[in-house]
Image 1 (cartoon, rainbow, N blue to C red):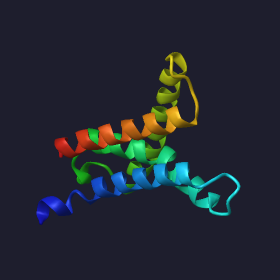
Image 2: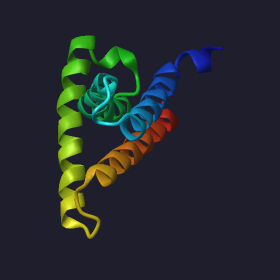
Image 3: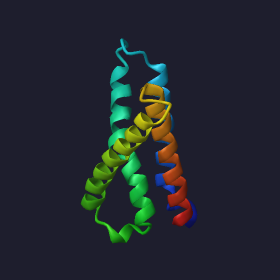
Image 4: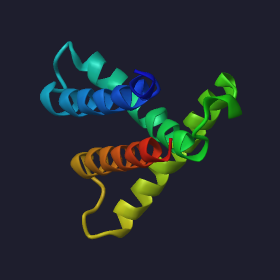
Length: 119
């Protein structure tokens, strides 16, 4: 039970990633449910990648305070999203909605799996 209890963040990250991709590709832009699409997308881009990287860099929760964790997660998330956009812009794939969402989801899942193995 102790191993499962410390891994709830991983389940939350995978669930949020799946919900974000689900809402991004199933809710049309003219629907009244587009608020959920914007909310999940904002949280996914502005918090989740940095949080996964922070869990990878600081595997123990006692090393970083909660306020520092939130601020570092937001700052790291925007830098990761910028780097993903830079690499997509320089690649043959290019920058479009599908390439950005899928590549950011792959980066998030990769970082979260690495952080899970590191913990």
